[in-house]
Amino acid sequence: MDQPGFAALSLAAGATPPRGVAGPTRRAWWQEGGPGTGPGLRLAVWGDGAVRPSTSAVMLLCGDARSRDRRLGPESVRRVLLGPDQDLLPTLMPPFAAVTLRDAGTLVAATDGLGFRHLYSTGGPGWGAVSTSARALAALTDAPLDREALAVQTMLGWQLGTRTLFDGVTKVGPGGLVTLGDGRLVETSYASPEPEPTTLEAAVVRMREMLRGYLGAYLDDHPDAVLQLTGGQDSRLLLSAIAPARRPSVAAMTLGPPDCADQVIAGALARRCGLQHETLTLDGLDELSPAEAHELCLDAAARLELMADPLAAAALDYAELRARPGRRISGLGGELARGFYYLGPVAHEKPTMRRTLQLTRWRMFVNDAVPPDALEPEFHDWARDFTTQDVHRILAATGHGWSAATDDLYLEHRMQRWAGGTETAVCTDRVSTNPMLDDRFIATVRGLAPEDKRNSRFLARLQVALDEDLARIPLDGRPAPATMAEPGLHRAVGNARGVIRRGGRKVTQRLAGRRRPPVGGAVLAAAVVRHWRERPQLLESVATAGFFRSDWLAGVVDGTCTPEPSAVALLINLGAALAGRTAAAAESTPSYE
Figure 1 (cartoon, rainbow, N blue to C red):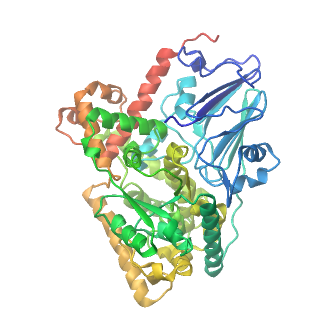
Figure 2: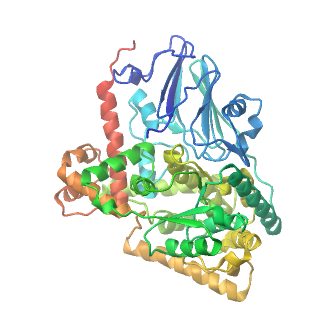
Figure 3: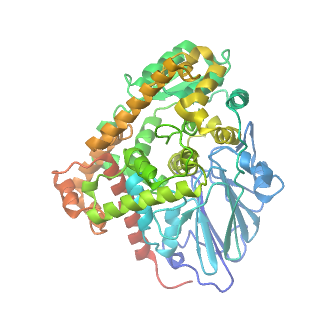
């Protein structure tokens, strides 16, 4: 299914339209006027079931609009966008975005407070544009590739800040409220203020009651919702927040092979709580033809707007084909509550380059960076150094001590651009909710001291407060939450061993030069490479772009080189970006009718 999307362009009187407006294929996209629009505003809408925004209708760009514990209808969403109820904007659950017309010539759009639902913007003298598609906006100006964005994606697999792969096209920021009219695009932010500090004890009590209330209300509204259950800590917290008497009526779902830790632990939890448990596997993925695998990955890359791993998204799409329909309850987001980027003891001194180098080299660049031997040496070295400097700039700009600054990095960049990009790609096809993205949960976690988050202390205490019996069951690769809930010598030793094991795996990966692909990623990467070998012309544009080594690409084509999935993922995205630029240039003319 095609996801609902839109593109809007506003021209001031007498302004010259951007070059791509005149492309013959795109003429229908950028029609002057149209139903409900006035002079100067050009609007295109696409996708299954899309509702055209107007002065009386809202185009919802996510599967559901929810303010904490209650669902909002279209008229309520319009009131939120246009003013009477704008105080509700920070409470809207990610991923959220919507667009409407204030009047015939003015469009208003908004995204959620975390920036999970991606919207994009660009502009020039006398004109501005906003869209759900960065590629559509890039086509307006034949935008060249953004070399800095490509460098970051080469090292991280995702983006920092508001960059896209296209120069001059940026992502609307977290809490973004966009007004487009009279040839001007104005973006303001309703981002939440700095949170108030809180104690561990108060945070546990508040979040215990918040999670119970949120999930109770959601299951009242949607009793058929499916809990995405793993062997980890976050989804177990959500299971624990569901009243025991209600659990036998709740369905759960786990992705992975039957013998993986997630399936084993989740299965045991499901049997213990009486859940209706469904397992999702990737059986048959390796039976796809090279052409089918390539098409599946290209489709995923397009929905990700070329800014995250299409192999991971395509594998999940394949698994979801056999999943039961219905809404999902997701536990993504607990990483923020346990100091995902903490290295060693909590540190309160300002970020230093030495610490940034440790974080990037030994943590951030481990899994998703393209191997150095695939890239032109000069570009690789520059990309590594630029990305490191950019991470350091972000950390220093927070004004916080080292550990707290890494929490900001995770929340404001990795969650927005990696998790948010993935959710954006599917948010109208698979409706999900995540109580850990509720503004109350985020504010509480941000108000905790790093010492209270380190080694999962807060989440473990919360787990015990929700369900002490489930807190005594070990996690995947870690001890039971109950052992992490309180300080103590035997617990500290056990927790330290867990940290050493996880850190040791990262060090071993780094020293061995190995990267861990996403589930199904290696299978799809191998199939895509076979397709390239059958049709080597698909890599011609990448070969001339100057980022990948020509001899390495030749080895990929002749079979003497087997690329890692991270390299295949970037090749897919880069190839699609370059192909889009070529198509845009072929369609554009200097005539502005």
